[in-house]
Amino acid sequence: MSTAPRTTVDVETAEASTLVDLLLSHRAVKDHAAMVDLVARLPEPVAQTRLVQEQLGFALNRLGRRDEAEAVLQAVIARHGPSGESNGLLGRIYKDRWEGAVQAGDAGAARWWLDQAIATYLQGFEADWRDAYPGVNAVTLMELTTPPDPRRLTLLPVVAYAVERRIAAGAPDYWDHATLLELAVLRDDEAAAARHLADALAAVREPWEPQTTARNLGLIRAARAARGLVQDWLDAAEAALRR
Image (cartoon, rainbow, N blue to C red; front, side, top):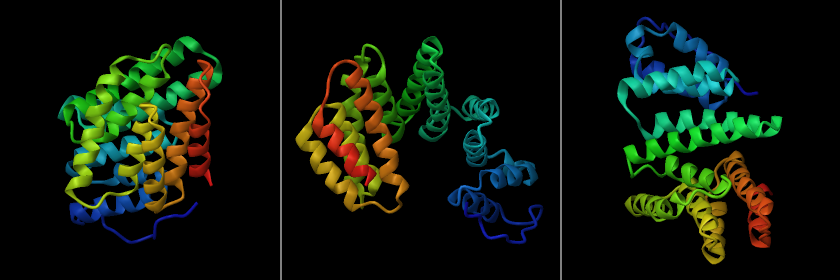
């Protein structure tokens, strides 16, 4: 695993912006242990900012320390209120717990964690309708419930509008196109999915980006297959993202 450059930074005297940059540089190279270590050494006023605590929760979850991560992010939301970022990170913890329960064959726990993830993502989206990230995660997970959660049909156009407004406001990135692709799949719109797939592939910056989208499409495909619905075009879209 790559590691961030080892720089000599006096955490007691450095500017807050310098410390945050160092924290994010560790995140960029997936050095999650270094992130946790740095937060522990930061001056209290910096360590307790919303951004730093969110990053701490993120890093703890990536290290598999989910109870600690959950407690950190719940405290952030209790102190500052729901947001797309805070709820998105907490929702990811619950999503990871859901997947763990599925793999363990614990259907009861899996359904409980799935409901927790949906509610948490939805709360984040409702806190700021402009942030499509928690919205698309909510509607995707709604597709995976048995039966699919009917609320997704109302939310789909709202999330799509949020992404479209973001694209109209400036240069779209990979995630904008990937979100529209995922939403098209959820609407069963094969033609739109093909267009957004091409746009997403053209905008890839890092190999892990399409892999993440392929993983989500794989979850949708598996849930639909379990209900007896096989869609060759969805299989092809997932395969294209995995190349």
